[in-house]
Each structure stands twice: as structure tokens, then as C-alpha cells.
Length: 212
Image (cartoon, rainbow, N blue to C red; front, top):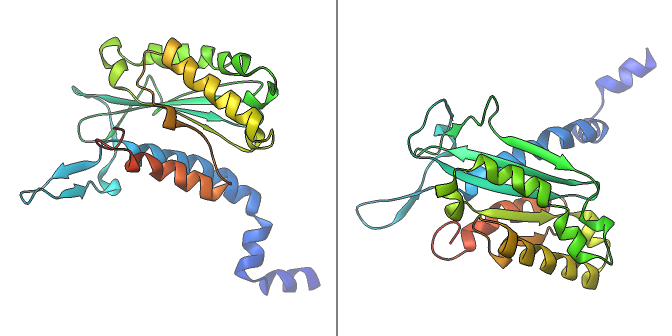
């Protein structure tokens, strides 16, 4: 009886703390989806020449598409590396890749497992890159952006080691990838939620459109 009474008087902050693990698991994929939708070309030109953002609520899954756009996102975590490939039609509706709304693959270990071998760290992404590129039509690969966001594992190595690995990944994408890459699209995320939101919004700061 006492236990039930204490639960009834439990505050909202206490409930959030008690279920923080569940909330985190749910929020991470939602943040990733939001990021991809946000970074895709989402602007239209009005008569006055100003840009207007296309509302996210209008986006939906589309079974067919004649004009498609792809985005490739690497999530380089401490336990392993993951790649997400998303496809959009001309109205920015998600287009199925096979039976799913995205291609998702992962491999272990992560980049941080190679603190003194930056080239090997970069090469560890090759199996994921090959699978991601095979999904994107050959004629669209040069237009398809690829971004790499590393998290806590790489930050823990220190600035020198993490910088060497990041540079190796940049060189790796430049030489080995047929996708569109830029040095500034390979970065270490700064913090957990803060980093997720910065990573989601940062492509909009790149010149020449959402992805430049």
C-alpha cells in the first residue's frame, strides 16, 4: 500500500528520470529521422524570392518515385559504426528501400578501437560504404551527400588522436567514395543531445543550398 501511494505522488521529473532509458532509446531514431529530413533540400522559392521551408508534417512514405534523392549518414559510435541510407522523392516523401524506409547496417568495432591506426580506422568503414553506394543509383552518387558523425568514443581519445582519425576518414571518402563528400561533413559530435541537434542543423549553414 505504501509503495502504491508513493507512486501516485511521484512527480513528472521523477517519472522522466525513472524511464530515462526508454526515453533515450525512443528519441535517438526520431532525432536521426528528423536530421535527415531537415538536411534534405527543403526550400521552395516564393514570388518575392524568399525561401520557405516545406513543412515536415506533409512528408510521408511514398511507394513510387520518378525523381529520387538519397542521403547517406554514418553514425560512428563507441561500440561500432552504423550507416543509414534514406531515399526521398521530389516532394520529400520517404521512398522505401526494399521493404524498409531506410537501409541500416552496422559493424564492429568503432573508429575509437584504432587510436594509433587512423588509416585502419577509416578503412573499417569500407564494408558499410560499399553497401550504401550499391543502394544509390550510379548516376545519382555524385549528387548524394555522405556525412560522418562520431560520438563519445572518439572524443575520449583526445584531440590529437581523434583529429588524425577524422582526417583519415576525410581522405578515405575523397579517394574511395563515389558519393559527394566535404571535409566539414566529417565531425565529432559535441555532447549527447546538444550534439545531435547541432549535427541535425549544421548542414543548413553550408553554402550553396542545404548541402552546398
